[in-house]
Length: 113
Image 1: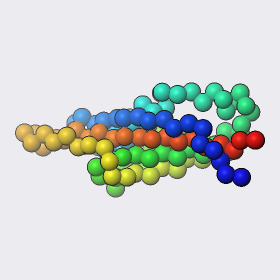
Image 2 (image 1 turned 90 degrees about the vertical axis):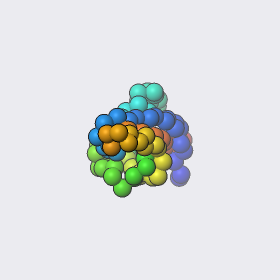
Image 3 (image 1 turned 45 degrees about the vertical axis):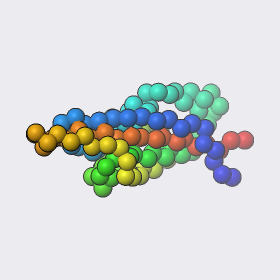
């Protein structure tokens, strides 16, 4: 049986100095996580190991995101992470220190009766 998406949460994060795409991605994921509580998982007796969590990170240089660090930051579920072109780099020509802004979308899927 196909799993049903029961929540889609969005977040934004940044690294203002250092241009670290993983730092910005982790902050975006934490922002999204702090917008919701998945209390229904416990209430409905859903096994946390059967929950699928799909994370999409949007940054200007997706190849620079450490996918494993992002994956490890999620508290439950079978986590998949992909980084795609998105987000925003804000140039700082004077100091060559662009601010990196990441977007995160977290979809949670469960099997419903």
